[in-house]
Image 1 (tube, rainbow, N blue to C red):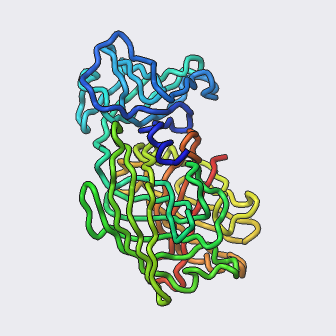
Image 2: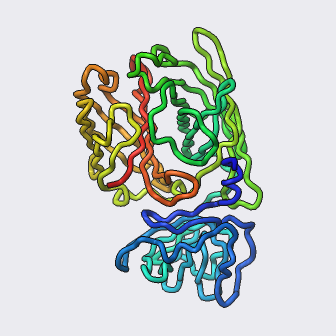
Image 3: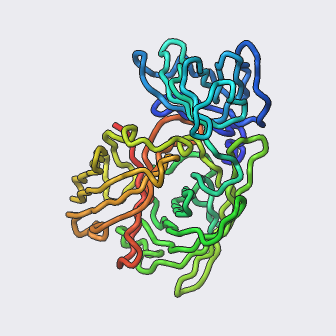
Length: 392
């Protein structure tokens, strides 16, 4: 089954912060429902209320997505999650509102507590999110075709036009993240030059990864100029779901080539969450960075971002703060790496970039931390770093 079809089946997948109950939820907007209680017949939506894995009550959770159905008493469905809205603070476009102002099809972010027995959520606050399918920013995952190779692609585009695209190893459109370093992978680091609601173009550099392997030479000794052009195509019936299609034209001193961006599906689940620092604090085990071996690198995130890697000797110190106003789950990262041994010496120095929370695949509701990092423009040699960290 292609990733595009999986996205169609799971349109608008909503995700609880560190809790599992999401699914569909991006039907066409309808008028406010006044039924006695919401409908529960949601296609492709498993009842996970008995398998939430939450110990005890009163645990604060967040969920973001489109309201599938809402009853007169404010009880609503987002994905598979039943939410009691009575007594919650409601914000409509940042202004005080009431439950009666909410409509099915509207995208909201809800903070509340989960009943561990029923799996229902009691909302504390409900805030509308000004988002739609016809917008450029977001997280996109799918296939990048280079020649006859189909490779994994993972992109993020910010509201103010920063563009990062990681191209990894061979990919079967299975909808999962790659958790092992891929030889010959690369990252496009760019900035939007032109943009509309439906299309954009970005220029930047394509920089090689996996360059600690002496057999890997592609884009390691020389970064390539890149120009990415793309369109955003809403998925029919989805409130925020869309696919990114386009090309990345890559030019080096040795020639030119065109990479095809094949239907990178928008992963809106965590991206729609607001960026709250307290939710990122904790320890993470790094899985993907070249200098991390056999789980020997633990990242600590609090007021600072810090790590130490036993095998490579690399140590890191930096910061991770919400991007712009924190309206979406995007973070600005500055990371100074030092003490790397000779094999990994290219990683010594400052890295900058973006981070976001992520699920490990399109079907699951776990939480991991993704970072797209690179040394500042003008640094020689140019080095990029992709990270994927699992909370401990």
